[in-house]
Figure 1 (cartoon, rainbow, N blue to C red):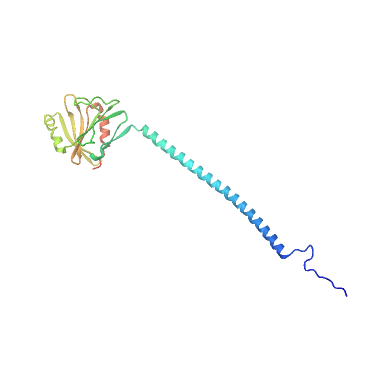
Figure 2 (spheres, helix red, strand yellow; figure 1 turned 60 degrees about the horizontal axis):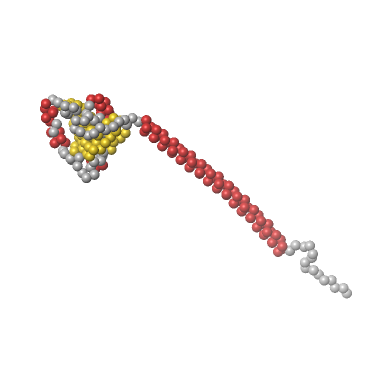
Length: 220
């Protein structure tokens, strides 16, 4: 009697383990390919976003620069500059012609009175008889005492006194001859316990003076 030997694994057959390994290999390759594709897609998308952000920022900077240049051009076309007085002395401000120069003769770094002078092109040497387009003074005196110093000229008729206001500021206005060489207009008003005087020394500057006093502001 012949005995036949059986074989559990015939040549050419594929085991379950091999199928699993092949499946895992395919899966790994697939995941790797997907990962590469996803990374490339992410990189492309990120580059596109970065490019758009950089472009937007560049456009924003250009727009801001153009706006600043436009504002600067508008300021350059404006016929006035702004004067700002000492902060501790009510910070009086007003607009004056750009064609005028300014000169501070007395500062208030150590207290005391404040004096600034304005004139077309170049401010001449300071003196009591020199005509200026504008004198700006802040005195360490009460308004009543400063007005009393002009009372003699008002009584003689050399000066005419009146009242006016602008932007809520009440002024005492003096018009006429302040001296033999000075004929003009002045406005005086309180600055806490001090007195501000803004004066033009010649009628030729009166149109600019009228425009200027409309822009006077102060911070009490």
